[in-house]
Image 1: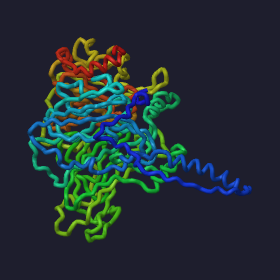
Image 2: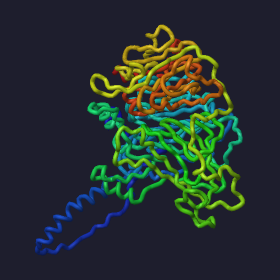
Image 3: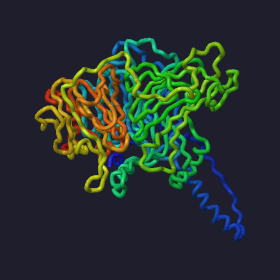
Image 4: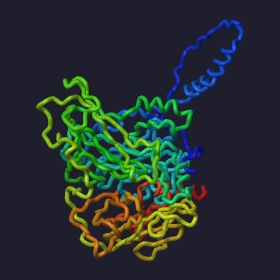
Length: 628
């Protein structure tokens, strides 16, 4: 099973080595003179009671502690200006090693997948048009820089079974691509099975160029928000796919929520007995991810839902949030109290540090001393939306808390309203009201409509599977990738094709405007994500899409790569199919990806005959087939 111990490396690059070394020291011999004495029954009773406690104490003391990287320094997520925003293209090179080690991000120990010993992993920060080179040495199965536009380098999209065959144990793959006109906030994560559920993800921030004067003077702060499972995800996947006795699709329910890898978990009765002392200690003295800020500054918070299943509500006590970006698309500013972020969606919001304790409905965590000497603290709240869960997890703590901390603003130097409005008087974000800037209207008509239906059904084996139309995706049986096997070769004309091997493929072999309509026939809400493109959302509403009758908006509709379809609703996306390759479109709830909720879009597949694939990818595919 992917992720098992025989598939893992322990080597770390020396420059990122966080292994702890015992200090050398001298040895002192101690001699004790032991005096014989008679044993009293009370002494025997004492030993009978004390010895088990001693064994437990020794076990706890000798058990290695949770890795210290969960005492996460804010500097890892604060963009400190080391990347100069410039129109001059730059090559940025990274060396990553993927390993697995135990950790306790919220208090309960679990296996964590890491890059260079870290989870969340390193942030990639660059300018639009920069060249990115990432050397990934992988002891697991795959890692990818998914989420970026790969024009001409589809094989680096990082989707196992579609654009590559996975990185075998001990092998290295070098991703080499150019940020072709893309800018904004996104993230990288493993696209193999459920690996990103166990911590294999990180942020990507791409700046516009040439740089415009930013509407903030405090800098950029990354906040990776996620649900957390205390159980190793391959075990959860196996249980989910084999659970045939329930009447609803039993997606695993998380145990906690985390902010930049830190959460608070107090249901220690639910963890293995040997882990309870450390869990209880963490629950009694919890960690909080904290940003130390300056007063009277405006910061850009780059929010990313890097979770597996839950939508997340985000807010900061006592502060309004001004939304300025969604999934890499700049939008007209909207001032809100909170916003809901669906899995894989990203937002940028502005926050101004101009509040004083007692000036808003919610009080500060620490009110400071009102003289500016001691900083005041405010809660950041990242709360899982429990309405998405199929059953109740009694051990769940849906709320992760973090802190922002700054000294009391000096009277008279505070920025002007509206940033100082009481958030209690403000609405939550309605994503249907987002307006991209600059305005960019969609093409007035499309040349091809791909109309599909999404559902979750129980099949003849009583397993729950996700479907687009009547196809539930599985990787090709010989471990191959669609792009290498060219699975669309069996499609004679443009349209949606059911091909051998459970491959549902939309073939588009000319540059044209394409509409994809998805009817969500499930009784649950789903975030859908398209690789490679950032389409216009030209229609959405209740029921099913009816061409010619459903309302279509082409006047500056929202453009984003992850769009949300509520239960029994539909959405239509429109894009210009101008990049050769195989692109996945899937539900981004991890468990629905694991049970088949994906289909592929093969755009300009005839041009792939002229593509020279990287030698590493061809070798890895040959290894998957057992030819090497």
